[in-house]
Amino acid sequence: MAANHHHHMPNTLGNSSLSLHSSNVVGVHYRVGKKIGEGSFGVIFEGTNLLSNQQVAIKFEPRKSDAPQLRDEYRTYKILAGCPGIPNVYYFGQEGLHNVLAVDLLGPSLEDLFDMCGRKFSIKTVVMVAKQMLTRVQTIHEKNLIYRDIKPDNFLIGRPGTKAANVVHVVDFGMAKQYRDPRTKQHIPYRERKSLSGTARYMSINTHLGR
Image (cartoon, rainbow, N blue to C red):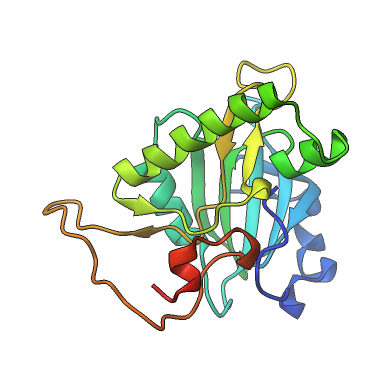
């Protein structure tokens, strides 16, 4: 899930620092299961809500991270709550040396699916997927946010056998940012020679131009 970001993994994210969590309960009633991914922010585990038996994804991020993202990601999920193709967020808090975020557990990413299909999608699949992706980006923009990390790894379909199995979801909002004031709708100032955000291969042309 949304692994392989744009920074090197800090050493604190070795398995040793998180092995403590593998049989742990976080946020009172989320049992942490097996590791399912990792990225610049930290590590993702499968989890279970012990009250409802619902499966979730649980992200761990070191609290002393240089650029903590999970609190901002939690806020963004709250802004987008209820929008189609946006995972539900269930919990954010601190557990020992880590920030913890629990969200819907989803299925494979478009990058995974592309690999499974021999790096070739049919025209029909491309059109169906593109329509959903564009709708998700439109939803984010309508909430006064820019996503800033669009790539196939960050679009996930629902888990096979669930209602959302054919729904394309967008995940991993650690880079998202408000681009206009929600009250006045004023656009944030235009900037040049800004440091780049995102993944070079999928960045917008404006971002490459330093805007």
